[in-house]
Amino acid sequence: MNKEELFPLVNKHGEVTGSATRGECHSGSMLLHPVVHLHLVTEQGCIYLQKRSKNKDIQPGKWDTAVGGHVDFGETIQEAIEREAREELGIDISVLSLNAVKPYIFQSDREQELINTFIAIVPQNININPDAEEIETGRFWQLSEVDKTIGKGILTPNFEQEYLHIKQNLLNILPTAK
Image 1 (cartoon, rainbow, N blue to C red):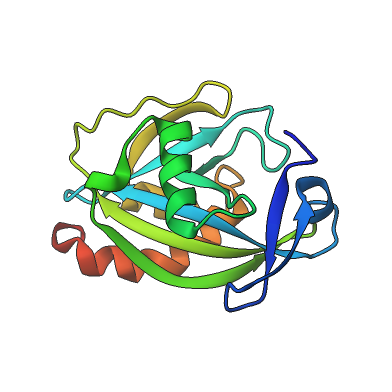
Image 2 (image 1 turned 180 degrees about the vertical axis):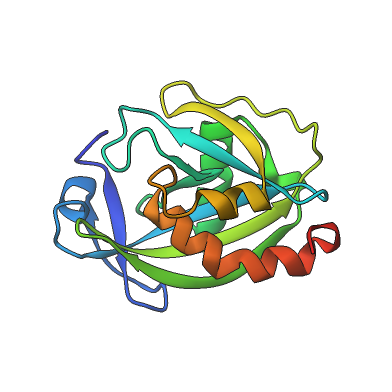
């Protein structure tokens, strides 16, 4: 991870107020910076999760959101989500219909992020090619399997919180998952 990578700093409305390095943002400073998350779900009610590389500086080796990453300074949310999907999973999401979820603030003991979350319905046979440097592996999970795994230290705390936050959104757009 490049600790000198520049991130925008934002207020709770997502308006850019300045910039800081990755190192500064992850140092416990609680500088609010934006990230993007993309949940890939099938019409059958499965959600794709990635297992984070053991080289990650935060939550290595845990299962997490299909796509997640920081917004670079000068980049829009749309540009960031498209870039992260290409980099992490090798997919072009410009052809997908993205459902936006209301942004929210996530805080851990190391950082504070404004999470911009999207959900996309994808075919079960979508061609996903995880980046081996960022992702150990990935697979589709049944929602019931995710429900049973929460709180067992297998999933990232951020994913667990977000999943509970967006689960109703998932159920609303996936009639077969109800």
